[in-house]
Image (cartoon, rainbow, N blue to C red; front, side, top):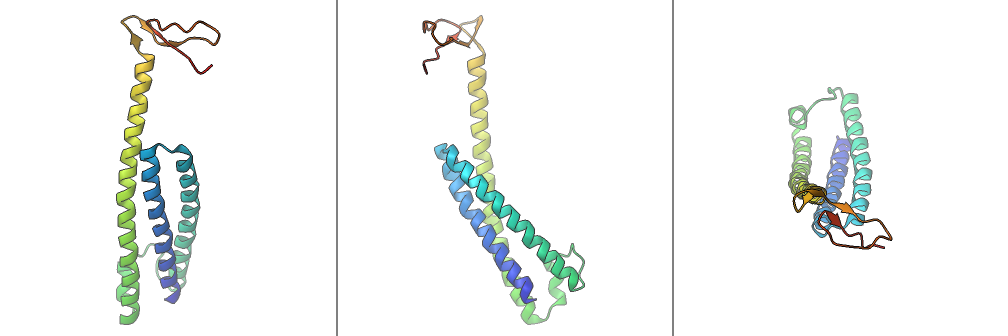
Length: 158
């Protein structure tokens, strides 16, 4: 069971790294730092790969020990001696604590992303809706005189 304890430690470490990234992601979302969000997403992908590998190792180890691959840790505890049971239970509680924190930050970050998406969609509607009643908003072409007329949005980027 030492191998299982090692896997649980590694999973807790990976999810702790996820938690650190979730904190950074929240800050990047609030600051609208797209470059930082891309970096965080790449790091999350790497962590996801590690989680999948650890999960596969855990399932394989338990299968080799004669347990079904879908067994929950709570179902495994009665099968262990008291020392192993306490160790596995402690590791599982630590993992559960980190996962709870990850879930909280993920929910907050999802709400922030949804709010940002709603704002962008709202701005798109504003810029594509009619202005002053009957003309749709359009960009003036480069080289044309930038007149701020009803129904036109100036393209002053050059």
